[in-house]
Length: 285
Image (cartoon, rainbow, N blue to C red; front, side):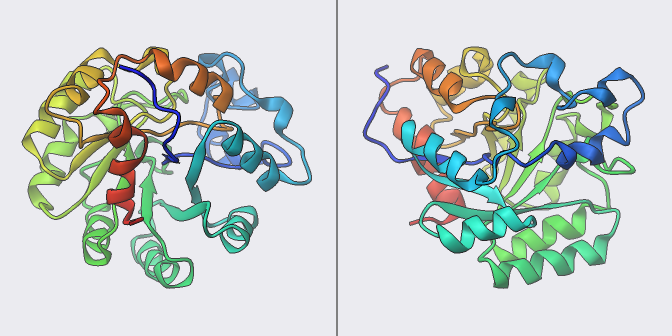
């Protein structure tokens, strides 16, 4: 259970500290309580949010500095902001591209995904079902053309599942909704984000059932990784669980990497968790 220090980690959820917090306005517009006034809509859930890093003139340099400090070689980042595009242009060896979709505009989002697959070598699509406006359930017909496009392009989809952190209704992200999607799209590589709680045991059961279903650890400090997921990775799920952080949204890399050695993964699980599973899914060689 020794934490390795010689693996170039692939972080499947990392970003850049923006000049302000307006990037979260799409969530604030849907909130109905005082959490709409927070800098981060989920700030009530996290301790030590690295807000001091925001406002810099060089957000890419800040993220690279933190990656270098803690052995993160490659980060999966959004490609729709100018900062994201610049990072992909200037540091193609350190960042790979993802884009987010809101399938309320089905054809517009399909065209966007196909265009970005050519422009920036898109490696993944991400969906926040509870954060779409209006909300879009994981198994909604609105998302089926997105899933089909991911199958066509042979790229994974990362989908938030479980009770969302922002104070929004959770029904669109109930883990049971994944079952039908995997049945209808046997070719799809589907990676859950944000924990799947309180249905993490159901998520494990579904991963046993569906070959294309995976779990990433985004938005969870390592000390809070669900026991069911750690146990699964240590047994039959070593190829199904992959590392994702949450920098700079809610967690510092320092906190994540300080706590990570305490996770009781078996020695043979660590390389897959930190790098190999993501490299396979994102086709990084």
